Length: 108
Length: 129
Image 1 (cartoon, rainbow over the protein chains, first blue to last red):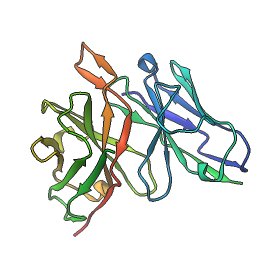
Image 2: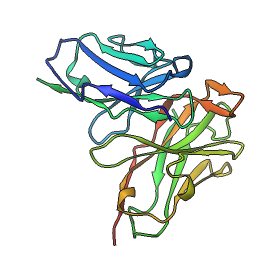
Image 3: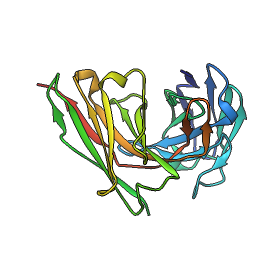
Image 4: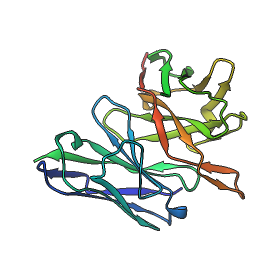
């Protein structure tokens, strides 16, 4: 089973700032089959990024994903008020698919 | 627009079986392009994949839950279901159903991979006597 470790656990930033979230895998993720999700309180997760770097339908271009192998990054170029949430990475390149423990982006 | 909706009892007694159904609307569950999963989230914690089903009826389960999980599909009702037996308080969580588009196939293991593009709103299931 691939274990995904996200860091930091909490990121305290102000609107307009850049957010950089990390997801590290315990072994290489096959063909960069890694996704990022955003979850707000009381809501289901929303797909942001798939294939490590492809934005899902309707996702603003301030969200970008990068990385390969065992190290992946989600970048939010300029935080909008609605971006403060918890973000999860997920690998779907091998079974069982697994999720990271999440990074909370909170308002500073 | 595809929509998924979970339904089932919100309270289950310890040692009993948790049963949930996910109804899919706005699209056919029979489409071979997708698979359908159950994912859960204990309060204040992260996401845990429970298992998935393909329209063929074949399934994959999380090894940590495999002995207690059964997922089935009813294409005539555009629904798929989850049964989790011998529940304990540790199974208390919000349960989500979700759809993933198949993008990757491992010919050696028969595993399909994909990201979840549609989710249900989630349903809280509490295990308590």
